Length: 180
Image (tube, rainbow, N blue to C red; front, side):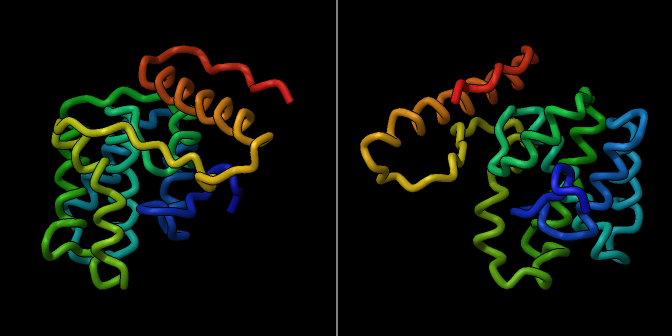
């Protein structure tokens, strides 16, 4: 699996999910491929755990596109490479798939020993699909206590990530990389 399209966290941490997301990325129409996968899942959701995992990942990508917020950094990169518009039909399918997989009797609960932690992790996606307000949350991936000389570099990198996320949300061009 190519690390650029491999997802390793949250709703994106299975081989089946990575394969489904890669297949969507290779399609000519990303939104149509997402709609097809979500529709198939909603018709046959009780028969296939792998399809349920893939549907949840797609629902989270739709939510991230809608809100511009994704707790999973690799989802940001995937969304950068794969522009698509979220229609009301796609949003409804994504919300229904999300509810089927994460509800009180969620189809994926038996696959995850850390079910409540997982639900907490995907909460921003649920809020986006439901149109609820949410806080911007970006995991910058570094400890809060840094040696003095690293603080400026890390703050600059954090600001770059935040501005890049805001730019993606607004549909603006990518920021150039920070100087070394």
